[in-house]
Length: 404
Image (cartoon, rainbow, N blue to C red; front, top):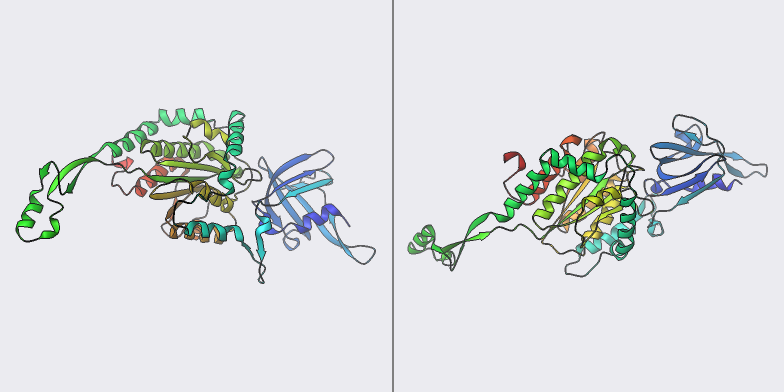
C-alpha cells in the first residue's frame, strides 16, 4: 500500500486551518498551511489536501483502487496547482497535527468536541485572581524571542515604520492620542458627604424631607480615569490579507495608541503562524511597540478558533474590571459554529467581543460568529477609525472621533 496516499486519506477535516503540511517532489520542497480537504465526490474521485504557500495553492491528491491481493489502496496523483499545472510526483509528505488534537473526543454523530474549548469555558467561569493563562502564557519568553526574530527579519510589503508614518501623516495618530488623553484629563463633578461646595439641588431636597441625599450634599472635582481595562486583538493575517496588510496594521496601531493613552493593558496576536496557530505581537505585561507589527505578514489560512482561544488565555493573567476582545478578519473562518459558542462563553463570563469584517467576508458569517449587533462590516480603509470608534463605545463615553 502507498504510505503517502494513506497519509492523504487519513487527514481529518478538522485539521484544516490548524495544521502545517510539508511535502517534496523531485523539484519541490514546500511547507505551508492546510487550507482545505477535497473529498473524492467533489474532486473527480480523488481526495486532496490543499496546501497554501505564499498564496499558491498546491493540491496533494490520492485515489482509491483495488490492489492485486483484493485489498484497496490509496494511490497518489501528481501534485498540481489550483490552476491544474502539474508539478511532479509526490515523494514525501508530513502533516503536523493541531496542538490540541490529542484532546479531540469523538461522539456518535461524527462531530468532534474539542475538550480544549470545554477547559477554556471552565477557566472563564472561575472567579478570583488565580493565574490560568496555561501554556499560552507559560511559554511567553520563547514566544517573545520568536516574535523579535520575526520582526527583525520582516520582508513584507507593509513595514511597521511605513504604517506608523502613514498614520501620522494623515493626522489619525495625533487625533487618537489627543482624544484619549482628553478623556483621562477631563474633570467631572461628583457628589459626596464632604466636598468643595454645597450642592444646592440636593440641599433643597433634604430640607423638603428627602433624607436619601444626605451623602450627596457636597460636590468636588475629580479627574475621570477610564483605565483598568484589558484589550485583546486577534488579527487575521491569512494569505488573502496581502492587499489589506497596511490598513489592518494601521488599525491595530491606532487602537494600541488609544489603549496606551488611557493606560489600558493590550494583548495582540495574529493568525496563522505555523504550529502555534497564532503569532504573538504584544503579550501580557509588555509595552506595545510599533516594531511588534513586523512580527507578522500575510500567508496561510484562517484558523480563528484557536487564535481566539490563544488571545483569551494571554489576557487572563492581567487584572482589569473590564475586558474587550476585537477579532479582525477578511475571510470565512471554518468552524463558525464553534467560534460562536466560544464568543458566547466569553461574553457570559465578562469579556465583550466585537467582530470586524471587511473585503470578501460574508456578513451572514459574521453574524453567525458574533451575533446580531456583535460585529461591524466596514471598508478596509475605514478600519482604523472604525476600530478606535468601537473602543470608544466600550469605554461607554459619548465622545467619538467624528464628533471632535
